[in-house]
Length: 352
Image (cartoon, rainbow, N blue to C red):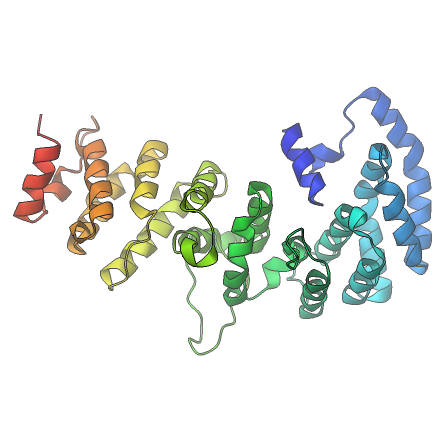
């Protein structure tokens, strides 16, 4: 929607809807400024210092139409500048010229340097350049600004992205969702897979699939990274609500992976049973799998030994005990409980 588009534009990311004229009057204004913008950008390819003037004018108060025209034509400028000067070199050169007020257009420029590289991963040189820019440009808290590595996260090693994930979580929902999208944008066919490193002694995997994102967000140690428990839970909820990305199969794959680790001896993440309960409400397609595979597996792993997870298990089992769908019921999982826990469950939820 328009409000979401404005937020993305503020952080330097432009959707097609944000760049579209909102009225006939704005369309006429865009038509008037488009040709001069294209001509100046053509000059800027040979004289990169002109890019500073383009961004400066585009970020002036009241220059919304000019900013839209610049953003619309930024892919051509980025592609031509990268071809002539090299993407990494021009990224650092333009960043050195840009002021903080011009940050939105600088990020837009960096973003288009990456998309100009067709479908291949960002080069290591460009990744290094964006990381260098990030270290030099601090946010309001005096820390390296995470927005400047967003364009290249699809090419950053997964092990390094794990270190950056807490900072994305601490940002706004829009920043987090943009970061998650960029991490997984080159991994579409792996969206439902948690990838294993080909060589356990060497970290080579790049980007982070949607399944991996869901797993790692659950496993965040929110106390250690300094975020409230509420934010930790909200971040997972925000992902679950985005069911175009985190659809039923992605959620199933993540829950399945975590439960497998539970059987190997790892503790269940704090949010795990809460996610299963939310999934029961959102994805009826997973009811059968939860009833006949997941809940029994958690019983096998002695979920009752953790009071919080046990309470969540009982609540989930109750939700699915009488679904009304033939053959779909948690009763089989309930019957697999140890006698003591079965009595505890029935004391809490008497059989009807």
